[in-house]
Image 1: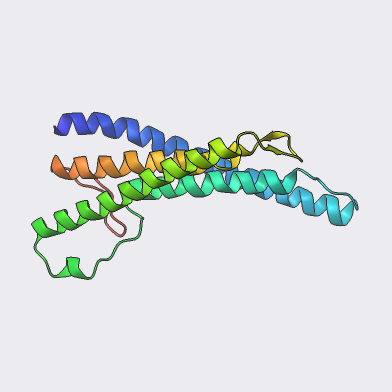
Image 2 (image 1 turned 120 degrees about the horizontal axis):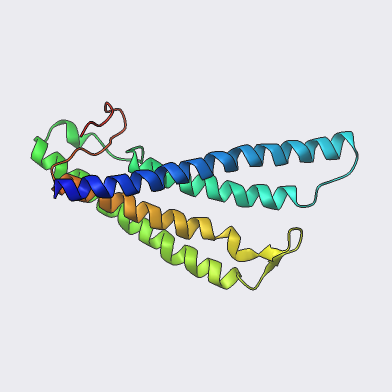
Length: 173
């Protein structure tokens, strides 16, 4: 099982790296678009009608993709107080319960994000002329990644492989 999980880790690492790149590029683009809007409005006395809706849409992408990568890398919220007093075997159980809760939340994101995207698909965003579904796709795709990364964390624990946790040293396999 360890070898299988190492192969899975190669795939999920690539997905996380890709999501992080998309999120980073999105953050840079949003910053450029907002700066351009400020320049156009205050220095040229005009306005870029598309900059605000495009920036908000891009923000959704980098928030949800970045959050999913945070799950993979162990940066999601957790309650650690009880973990300081229970034995190591109990800690693994609580970590897995936390990952199951996160998996359920990610599944909800997928389900409702997809539903919202489908319901908004016929609406056209006037200033950019694309479907309103693009506003909700990051919720669904981010949810899918949250589910994948959470399941990977549980499977790694079952295979007796380390999982990333906030504050821990880098993982070595």
